[in-house]
Image (cartoon, rainbow, N blue to C red; front, side, top):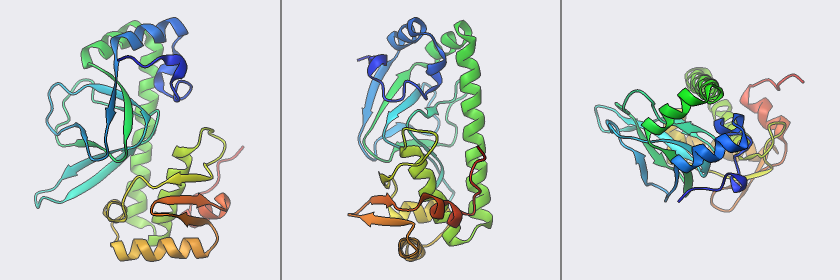
Length: 234
């Protein structure tokens, strides 16, 4: 089933937003929507025929399994994010839904044809790949150098930014897509440290926890300050 572009919640932020209405509708006809439940795999390491996809709703993780069988979360994919390797299989990475998710998927050959036909789409995908690479590098730097509080605050700020419909401010409320164990795995911390630092960030007044996974951002500026990141210049 194709997703009507006019009803797509990421129509203004996904890579395909650079296309005209006619071009976008033509691209949509070549693709289809796919729904995943939490824990369901989109791509497995080594898949030769893995499709390419834009995440419409939900969250995904890109992970690898080390020699000892432990999972390492390498990256997160948020709505409007593109996932897929156009010219190579996922040699060592699994892509798994963190929450119930919906995607707009394309066979690799169809997307390759679209890139040839629409140069603007190729440029948009390149920009998104560069942004994803920068985000991954920032995460690696954070886990290598930042304090436990900085790591957790930065991840919470990133989740709030991803949940927002505006590039100018973060969402006031969101659901954590990761368990505390997954957060600990990703940030190189223990589950006990994640729980303690989450409580300290709440006690500082930056956030309030709501239920099992709900987070309310009470003071975005404070949360950003705790993350050690500077606010973007206007």
